[in-house]
Image (cartoon, rainbow, N blue to C red; front, side, top):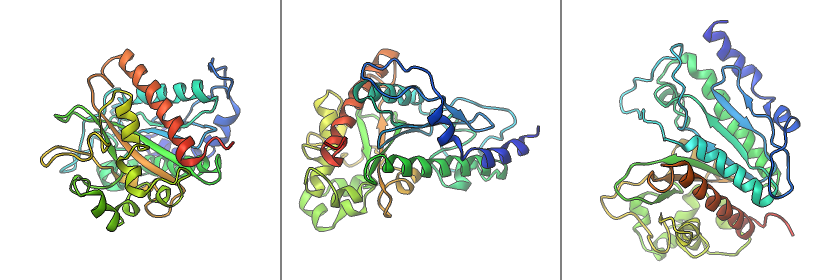
Length: 315
């Protein structure tokens, strides 16, 4: 079968994965009684993997792949990023399993197995594929199914859901960078300026600002006590923005979110709020023990966050 034919089949054959993955499975061995582990579904090329869930949570690793098939051309576009985010695929799986152990409910999982030199799972079509049209089917399958899992996660809880995308960075400051689509310059503004300019309504969690179960004010959700940054910092993982580190200093490197955070967040009215988590290497992604420890902490934080801000599970 030719490569072109396989990519065409990927577009035509990937959509039913949600039904297939939800039906199959083997025992997951969770500490809390919950769903069996669904059988992962790969697209027909084996490049993309999706596992159905039962919680209003999506965990995605778009840059953790390692596959470099010779049949797939390298991206050579000017300004493109080619480095993979080491160990984020493993981290994503660990977060999902830790969440299952804690809640008995399974987040939706999406993994891109292609190395970033071949395909970028967090860019618009031309940059993602390096303008190689043979990869258009992979990009369409990836994004269509991310749309699908986001919608399905929202249906798991009254039309609301949370999309978490895991990345890795090698910046000088070792901390978790939380991307809400607000720039470092915006974050350096005072709370009063951010509130008066309605900055949070320009963010990837815009819907949460108007529909949080905790009643927290907009900037409080960004870097106040109930924010993801505060919860991470309190668990021993420095994070920005947070009460202890409200904004990157002038000159600090900072990732505020990419194409997926825009497309799968609520900035433009989507049902899911989206957050990009850029994880430092040492102490978080470097060893199997550190990944497992961080995954358990993050699963606990996401459980707390979903309860406080989304009212899940409903009481």
